Structure formats: C-alpha cells, structure tokens
Length: 344
Ligand code: PMV
View 1: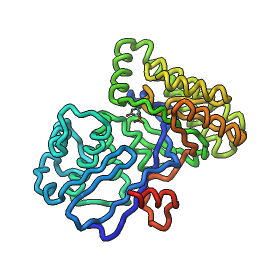
View 2: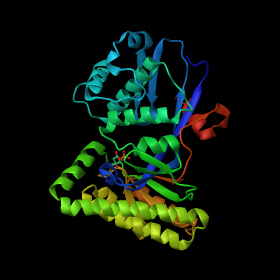
View 3: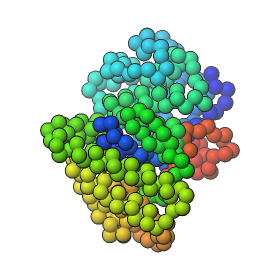
View 4: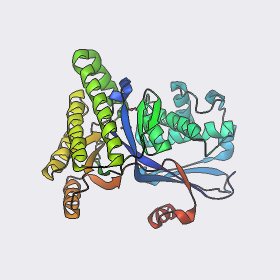
C-alpha cells in the first residue's frame, strides 16, 4: 500500500513518419511531446479503488475487497504477458459491460482494470524498470487497439525520439527540439478498423500498395538522417526537406485510404499560412501535426492557431523530444498541473 501520494507522468506522442507502414514491418519515427498525461495515485482508507479520468468523463470505483475475491487466475502470472480475447471478455464481465462494447471510454476502464488486477496479482511494481512499464503499457494498448505495433507505448515509456521497426527500438541521438502544432480534428476513429482497411487494400492491390509502404519507409529513413544532421547544425534547408517529407507522406497516407475531409481541411488551412501538415497516428480524423519553422513570427503562428480553432479543431503548440515516463514530487509540478489535479 502506498503511504503517500505518488505523482507520475508520461508524455503524449506523435508519429512523425511511418504510421500504418510500421504495422507491415517498415520503420516508424515517433517522438515524445511536451504535453503530458499526469497520474496521481493516492492512498484511501475507504476500502475502494477509484478511477477518475476527467478528460473522458470517467469516474468509477470498485470495492477492493470484492476485487480481491475475484477469480483472476485467468490473468496468468507473467509480467506484461500476452493478453487474449478471453481476458477482455472476462474483464467486461467484471466491469459489467456488454460483450459488444467498443466505445473508447469503456475500453479505457477495461485497460485500467486489466493493469490493476494483473499488477496487484503479481505483486510487483518497479518504477525504474522501463522494460516492465513498456510491456504493461503495450498490453493496455492491446485492450484498446487490438493489434498495435508497440511504437506508441515505447515512445511514451522512453521519451525522446525513437526509431521503431518490428519491435526493435533505437533512440535518435540528440533530436532537435522541433516546434510543432498538434491539432485534434475531434473526428472519432477506430485505429483497429483503419489498420484493417490498410491491410485489405494491401491484399487487394499488392503491386500498388506495397510500393507506397516502401516509400513511407524511405521517408522515415530520410527524416531520421535529416534530424541527425540537424543535431549538429540546423539550417533553413533542413526545414524545407522536413516540409517536403511531410507533404509526400500525407499524400501516401491518403492513397492508403486513411485520410479524411477534416484532415484535408487542416492541411488546406495550414498551407494557406505557408505551413506543412500531415495526419499523425491512424488517420480517418484524429490528429494532425504542423511543422513550425524557427523563422516564423509569433503573429503568423497565432493566426494559424486561430484559423484552426475556427474550424472547430483543438490546437496545442508543443515541441518534440520530451522525457519519458517520470515520477514527480508535488513541489516540482507546474502550478496549472497541480491545480488540475487538485480539482479532481
Ligand atoms: O492512432 P494512434 O496514435 O494510436 O497510432 C496508430 C499508429 C498505427 O501505425 C496506425 C498503428 C500502430 O499500431 O502502429
């Protein structure tokens, strides 16, 4: 049992290049953002374990005693082990959810229950052990996305900028702290369905789609090379190359069928301000990223953000290469984060 409040955070992430292609064995470049999710673990003496996810409107509590009485033998013993469809079905029973529930809020509850029950069962929690955290995070991802590549949990665990290919991870040395806009179109989408659609398109048109994946792979490698050069001495030309890579990848992703009218709109709006954008992640709505060159004047950035907000999108200005999962003391937290946590 925790004796005091534990504050932990992990960075959000975006995929710079390689989404979808990574599912088919190609390279992806993923970076941690200076936009973090904070978790406050707080001991209670009311015999309950509570889950409060204010951003998605979740507030649930379970009696610890009744959770302890559950037969969790179905979860097995190994650390961050393999989650099966049967596990998910049993968890739905525990949570009292219908068998066919797919809404992200309920899936988030299931991911929490799975991790809570499994970690308590194995009675092991080693904060420093990033490998272990990454394995658990991967299983949580699997509850939500089915068959994820593993790139998302890896970059949020280790932070920085990662090259990821078929489970092999390497960190990019000293990635430049590129500034970007992260834009949420607020159009909901299912990563699982989009990944499945790309697979079907690959099977239907192998001669057409396989070269697209190979080209996306080459874009990721070229981006990695340019970021490497920028670590030593960034030049305006480097930014121009990054912008070209963004444009080419966005067109490829459209050809894979994961574009969306909202993402087209996002690209048009930023093009009108002389900026370059692509979708990030699964596509079909969701989020996009826009590169902010260092020569941009503040009023130009503000005007772009206003235009994007005018389309109904949420927009954050952030930078890439943030630290991975971290533990905080209350005093080291930003006042706004502290306030947010206190208001829960
Ligand atoms: O939509 P996100 O942020 O979960 O990213 C999905 C990335 C894909 O490459 C499409 C799938 C994956 O598992 O890598």
